[in-house]
Image 1 (cartoon, rainbow, N blue to C red):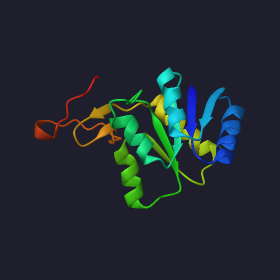
Image 2 (image 1 turned 180 degrees about the vertical axis):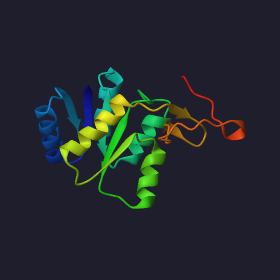
Image 3 (image 1 turned 90 degrees about the vertical axis):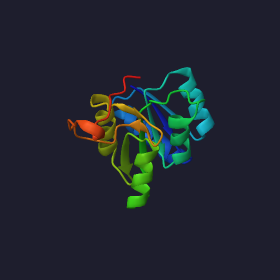
Image 4 (image 1 turned 60 degrees about the horizontal axis):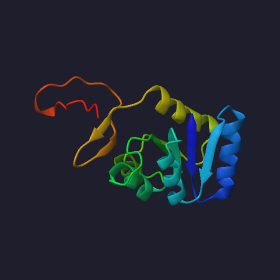
Length: 150
């Protein structure tokens, strides 16, 4: 799996890259600038993005016409853990959230969740991102959503 880690904290990126490499992730790229992250994504050499609390970047990935990959899985690592922040992160289209301080084991659990249990991608006027529902509930009538195979 090819990982791209985006954060302005170089020290955290170095630790993250070293720890992920030590447990078998051979392809971990780190960047401190969203523009550099977009360059990696445009090359198509990224399977998953790990970012610190950068909602602007995630919203660009999910909504902008110029986004190189609207469906790229995103894990956000954040220390902002109030309900409003968590809802904002979820609503921006993040696949998984890890709360700082988190262990490498907790981060790997999020990576494995994204890799082994991909969720449908939702395109709507009010939300673009992975389906926020964790359970499969079969509905009929006006509450039923059509699957999106795009």
